[in-house]
Amino acid sequence: MNFVPHTPQEIKAMLQAIGLESTEDLFSDIPENLKLQRELDLPKGLDEMTLRREVTSLSQENIHTEDYINFLGAGAYDHYRPSIINHLISRSEFYTAYTPYQPEISQGTLQSIFEFQTAICELTGMDVANASMYDGATALAEGMIMAVAQTNKKKVLLSSTVHPEYREVLKTYAWAREIEIIEIPYTKEGSTDLDFLDQTLTNDFAAVIIQNPNFFGKIEKLKTLIDRVKSTKALSIVCADPISLGILEAPGKLGADIVVGEGQSLGMPLSFGGPYLGFIATTEKLIRRIPGRIVGLAKDQHGKDGFVLTLQAREQHIRREKASSNICSNQALCALTAIIYLSALGKKGLKEVAEHCISKAHYAQKVLTQIDGVELAFPQGPSFKEFVVKTKEDIACINDRLFQAGILGGLDLGRFYPELKNHMLICVTEARSKTEIDLLKQVWEGLA
Image 1 (spheres, rainbow, N blue to C red):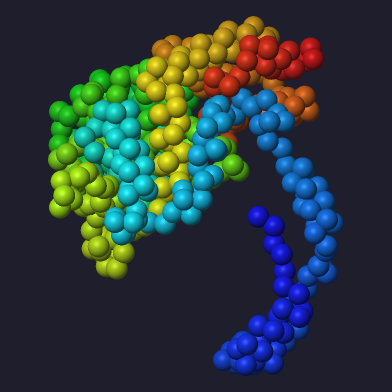
Image 2 (image 1 turned 90 degrees about the horizontal axis):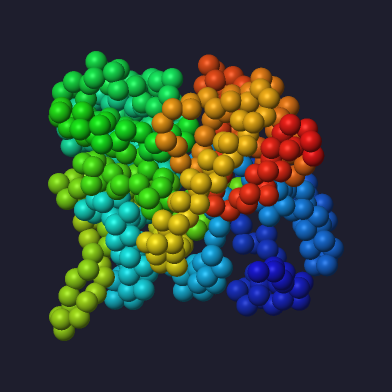
């Protein structure tokens, strides 16, 4: 929306209406020694036409996935967004919605959150889900806090195949709560080391945290992992890619206690890193440990269905020391985006998206490993839409060459795993075409 400033005459009329001489009088209660006492060091104002031209010019210095072919993933993914999403979420009753404290006037917002919760339960195979988690990293941290509170234990096992930035967030939360985190190394296949898990896991641990598919794109032996956790008193926490759940078995059906994840791939744009959408789901046994808010379906005095906020401890807003969490912001617009995306695709459509991701990623593996000096880093075991290649050439040089050709290459894993120097994490979603994958190969080997 354009900003239309007040004219000097309008400002004068407004000041006269409230009995003031100047705008400075509005700040008369502020001591003079706290005021700047000079004009702000800003350029002079521009007329609307010049300003629009200036801002447009600045914005065009950014690049985005409509201009570049994107093979970069690592937690934020370039999936196709059906046009119906923007058409619906742009309606004013959605994008101005605040936290629905008054159910009698918030039935639409409450129903959209309820539908989102239901979809997350269907995807994850869990009994209950909430709304208004900030992102995947903090949702995972909240899951860890749930497990610690439930078991009254202060030790957690964390797979090193969990997203590195998620692990850093977990460590920050753990430091503040004096939780000890022990990392499980990964094997030469790029998956969680089950032998280390067996040797380390005891009844002293609150939880074991796993990502599936993991950060390297590998599909973990999730049932085996969960079964081994269940042999102790620890809880199993799974960080899942929601798109993968269109084709993989739901973690809840495999026995997981808490399932979390990042919902950005469910219809949200990359958008320079946010806002995104964390989700968290759990069993009925842990329902009172879940943070945030839950929308429930009830009956009014006339017997009609109605939606209400339920199981929301008031301490979350006014008594922080007693709260299960201090997450309070409303993420309803992001949750609405996710439920529109899932509704538009349906079960069949989500499965097809997941299948396209797998088939295109495997085609990319095949053609890239035809390049001299490029090989799969973890050739054993299944993977989803991401995979790791090992190269003889420096990753920065490869990515620079790709960038000059309008291609965003993969992530240099040496940034997070020093032992993986010259290893690149590549992502291929359903949005990539065979032509684009072939072009990636040609530019990579210097033929285009």
